[in-house]
Image (cartoon, rainbow, N blue to C red):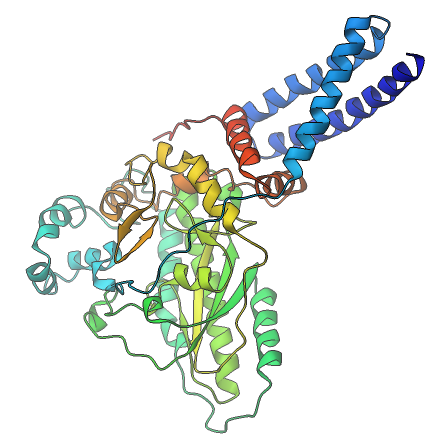
Length: 451
């Protein structure tokens, strides 16, 4: 009995110390992130942690207390073992053999250009008459992002992201260029290392390479009136996908102006990187093209997935294993046969977590995100959103919303505490359910949008 009491004193002291340190760190992190609900709960847990373990030590002479104390440690030990077990249900492999390629003209961004170029609209609506009434009532009749009339319009701050997108438009020729007529004999592995060095040197947090498949390309151009309806033909065989991370402090202010200011900043950054990579490849005599906002021929997310950079999230965009949905993508395509990259570990846990969580769907202000299972469209099963309802809301408020990104449990800074939680989530489904519960406890399940 004496030996057991001594052991319990040691364990209680250890639990008190470790628990206090971790909870205090979480408290500090929450204060810095201005998550005051989380900070308040952390303070309560800090006090409760101190009370429980101190009480066990002080009252250790009582047999009932000793029994409860021992049972608690046994339970904690078993719980820790379960938490560390790596078991994620095998996710069904998406059958990509029958994917119907996507026509960029169907994208809401493309349909929005009819507002400034009405001469194109009849060409589209003759083939898609069911979309005309909605577009005219909810998209084309409303001001564009950055124009007066939207909820969050600000004469000076809205001009910040307008300047960013205008800069991308003005520099689109930087994505194109002639390859050096004198082709160099190159080591493709060293070229891949050089490409990755450029990407990270100029701000990318991740980069991947994959072979181009038909479903990676749009069928027809639609974003720019002068090339609208042009069939996309490319002899490029490989794609380099660049990931840049958004500032979570800006993301957490969604759907207000900081979210679109940050989005535009990262579109500029990612576009600059892929243009540099294209220039680098062309220097050695190979053809290359940058694909950036408003100037894509490729679809970024499926390329990123096949390059091993993440998985498709319930909210319809890439979920990176570290940065979650707080990212922006850009692509360089080339005829240089580069070595492809693979997933860094098994990322099935991302698919499973999105099935469990559903927080983005429950908080979407337009209910554009599916709450149930993946739906089938374009010949395969995948997460997809109702782009019409989503974009109509963008036009109403004057930003790119991003509220689904804000509420995602992965939309947290890349810090020690949050990385511990990400590791915990990656282990098994039991942890994921518990993580969703804890996220709801600390941050709230339903988040006020604050319009």
